[in-house]
Structures are given as structure tokens and as C-alpha cells.
Image: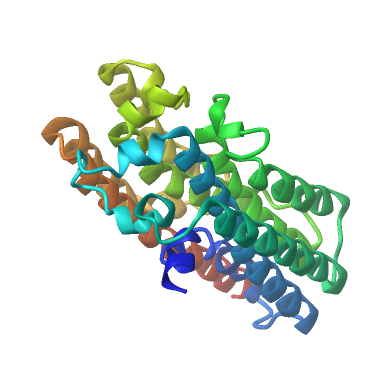
Length: 305
């Protein structure tokens, strides 16, 4: 069971708070959510766990087969824990991993279908989004291998955006620009520790032709790319506040995340401690989604006043 939990990366929960971010935008000013919205959101959350577990299990199968995981988690890289890759450590076989991925994918599909059926609203764009999220997630590094064709970074961010918007669409039944801004900021969180992982994994990714930005460009080019992403996160919140899409206080509220991003960047690309910088990325993301929830509650309280 421990091996399957590691295969599914159950200790990395950073996509799942997307549901809380979306629902926090609906709690106030009414102070409560319809039972149908809560049921649908719970089913969507459970389904998301199964879909993401299937996705990362298939990613491990591909990484094991092409040799990139053996390179990135081998004895030459003491910063990576081989036990997190049960196929590399020998705890599971490829066949076991594939069966696990297929079963969890089916469970995820059933739970997401249940979420759509029980939701108080079913706007067409939300149903299309759910279908796209499911198909694309399973093709991330298996089947079509989206991440092997230059779309890895876009997918990592887009999955977070999609989860926030799908939850909100099922519960609210309409589109919100402010929630979309929050969805993009939420999706940037996993991306901003993913690009540091990619920086560490350049040799393995280049060896198998996985075209991450880090593997395709020079060290300087990669540093510029990561720095631009860090700046874009702050500028998005600033633009939302400046245009009235978000409250004026939204950008200042998110400044603690910007401070952590600055520290993360300097540690990774000035000091050269990429894996420690990656760990700061987890902290920044987790602080970020707490602040997004706080922003929604504050905005709702203002609307109720």
C-alpha cells in the first residue's frame, strides 16, 4: 500500500485545495452553500484525487520505460529519493502500475460524472472543461505524451486553473473574471515548483527528448524564463486590482507570496541550490491558496456590508 501511495504521490496534495478556493468565492455574503453544490464539489474533489493519481502513475510508467526516472533518481543524484519512484526502486512492476492507473482513472471518471449529475448547475463550458481535463490529464505523459511535445509547463498551470473553474462552474453556474484570475494564480503555484524540478532534471529530460524549457534553452535562458514567471504572478494580481477585476487590496494581500518567490529565485539561480528553492515553491503555493481563500471571504464580507 505504501508503494501504491508513493506511485500516486498522495503526499503531494497541492492541486486539491482548488475546490476550497472556488467554494470560498460563494460562501459570502449568503453565509452558506446549497447542499447540491457541496455534494457535487465533494464528488469532484474525490474524482480529482483519482484522476491525478492515475496521471502521475502513468507518468512514472513512461519515465521508467524511457529511462529518465532512472537517471533523475539514480545513485548519481543524491538529492532525489528513489523510494518516491516505486518502479525505479523495484517495489512495483510496470504491469501493477498500469492496472492501478486504469482502475483509478475509471473511478475518477465515475466520480466526475457524479459531480456533474448532482451539481445545481451544468453550464456547457463547465461540462466541456471537465471532459477536456479528464482526457488531457491521462495523456500528459502517456498515450499522446503531451509533456513530450512542449506543453508540459502549460499543462501544469492549466490543470490548476481548470480545477478551480470547474468547481466554480458546477457550484455557481456562471463565469467570474475574478475567480479566473485566482485560478491562474493557483495554477502558477504547482508550475513554480515544477520548473525548479525541471531545472534539476535537465540531463534526464534531454536524454529522452522531453522538451521542457529548462532542457531546451541555456542556463541563462532558463533563469530568465523562471524569473519572468515569478514576475508574471505578481503582475497578474496587480493588473486585476488596477482594472477593478479584483478589489484594490488584492495585490497587496498577495505580497507575501511575492516575497517568497523572490527568495526562491535568488536561492535557485543566484546561490544555485535548486532543490531547496523547489521546496520554497511548495511553501509559496500553500501560502498563496490560503490568501486566495482569505481574499474571497474578505470580498464577500465587503459585499455583505
